[in-house]
Image 1 (cartoon, rainbow, N blue to C red):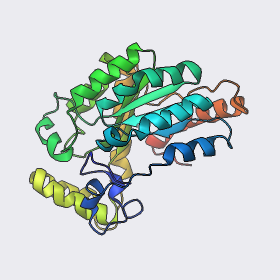
Image 2: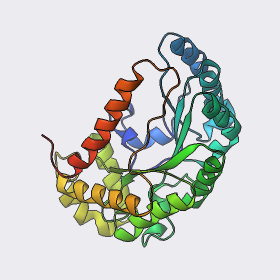
Image 3: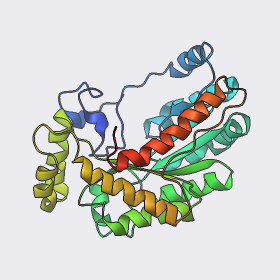
Image 4: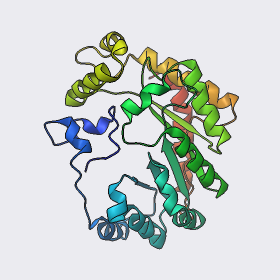
Length: 284
């Protein structure tokens, strides 16, 4: 529980995930489940093979090594993995992830919200104070791509008025393509309960000029910006992905010998068809 990456916009600071009265403690008080690998092995032995989501290589990982042990459990039991990562340090387990990919499939997605081409790149260290800058993650992406592992960018959350300009949107997609990524998944910034108050306080400190626009986009009682805003943003990312020959959706890893594989392929196909309709506002 907790994350030393300290991203100021992280939704994990919401009350649902953060038990501390002060959301800032989420990046300061780290609780480690040291028996997680054993529990994972026990749990996986009782369920059908399916994709396991894993993260993350925050500084505590260097002391406890739990991520590697969790990956090893997935390899031993033949489970595919999806790794969502904020740090280039996931490279330390490249060979293990490659072994999983050879046996069952693996996907590594990097959380990146800006490139050095962004006009507001200078503010990024304020929003991600304990994370190495994006070029390191793009270089790591390139190494996973060269190893034959499906990789791409988790472009979430896109900060309104800061990293949602056309220049940054295109740069993130282009950098992903240029570093071997095959997808960009875009997502909006959500703000809830104490996390909302916390983020707005940090925004006032980091980029006070944007406060008026956030007060309009996130009025009292709102969780996210208007659907019209997100629809335009999602459609722009989709168009840019098409322009650069990559996808705005992440292919679901096919699992060898999976039961109901046809059903899941159909479900995935329908989900991919529904996504652009949702962006267009066709919710019915």
